[in-house]
Length: 636
Image (cartoon, rainbow, N blue to C red; front, side, top):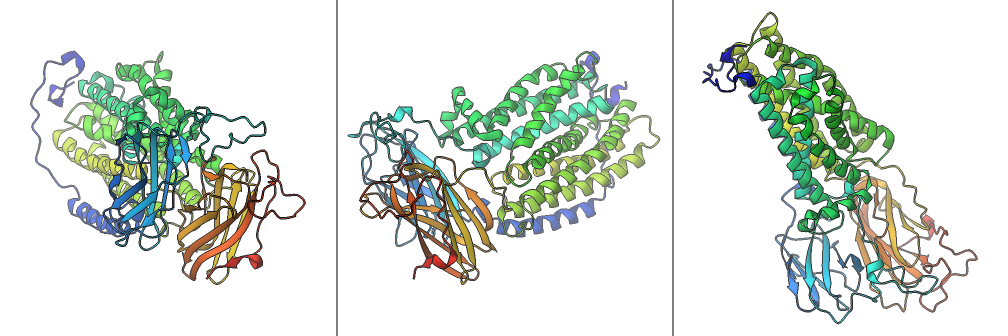
């Protein structure tokens, strides 16, 4: 090997020399600049429409109690002050010691529309209390959401032996009372939660895994001399360290998010086991961390990927780690096809992005011998099929998750922007391959001018790929716009609201329809787009001391919104009233009323003076009370 390479092999690690960088020569720079300017203009226009991710939403300035505060006694109210105006469809929920606390009023908005006040009807128990809030925008669309927590040091309410509102075990058939410590903590689906730390960890983990896997594939396929280079070995180890840090951050943040707790609680490794109950996305995160740790066996000695005796496990470990990326979103229509497409997309993307990053950072770092030429040619061969699989699998996911809602939903708009970035990456990549084929067609070594020119071309492609991965992590913060497949829950209560004047057709479902925590499902069939301010309010039976429960539904058109299994506290049996309000392009639905029956926790028909119990002969937990359109009354 020539020592003009700029970095010698490990056998000559002490013979470093200064490499002279040749003057830059002509890449189609003007065309690339024009492309980037046009792309930036379109990106700006699209981002203006992606409201849920933007900085235009009102954010929380301060709260009373403050986040992390320690209180000597329970507060009498919760105050949220925002840096901008909020709409009138807002929701605040509280849980103490992992149990729902429902003895609170609906949030009252101040005259300047910047402050929400929630009155606390009964004292909170001692312990850690979490407050989750969601506000709407003045236009009626769903706005920002977040959570904070505080600790109550002492309270007249005991944390043991106290029935927490929403606890279905207190009035079980046997009449025995369970303590709050016996109630299982609620764990959300990992694919339905996201925050800044989760996004950062996800992006770093995805980027590191893609580069590590793509680099190893290129070494196996076209550059077996790679592990002999000091620069290549250091590069692989640095990438692995980045992957480990990003994956650990992702697991910590995700384990805290699925429990609605602070980031600090996720630092406890015992909390990571909660991800096993957080759906396939949570299990995949734990598996990814284990596989990334195991990959240290490969990066310490990269030659294992070309040694026939160790090649199989050395390549299987990073491959399985990349497969976990395809399990980030397993719901929606054609779920099995979605998992297959997601895995194929992750593997192909990693080969494309990881290979081009290795070329730009290592292979083309300076001039060298014929093995570098073979590496570039080999990448051109394997990247072609990888690009095709990436694009085809991406289109499958686009159709499956968004359909025709690319412009009407935030997920679709961000996906469209990502697609444009992929198109730009493809354009730059094809140009780089044309240049490399012309320069290296008959070359026996890599000259300094050729290395410099190709490094800049492939480096631009790699830089766009890094941005694309960032957008992929951002996409997981949004709910796809296309109607997902119906879940298999046996909903005991189904109430249909139809208003031809407002052009609205939706169904609200509850399971199991008994006293305690219920799962809520809202399916909107009409309008297909333009729906704002959709809110469902549940009023308890007459004579009950419970307050109303208001739920803002994050749908802006046809689609399905589903809550966790134990979410909505319906704490008394009897005849409840449901009110639905929304605004559509055709008009307003100020409050459509209908009633339904909540049975006792053991499934028996309530025998109580609270509310009105209909005389229907078969009112059980399995009763469906779908309200025909003609019987739906529209208030106001």
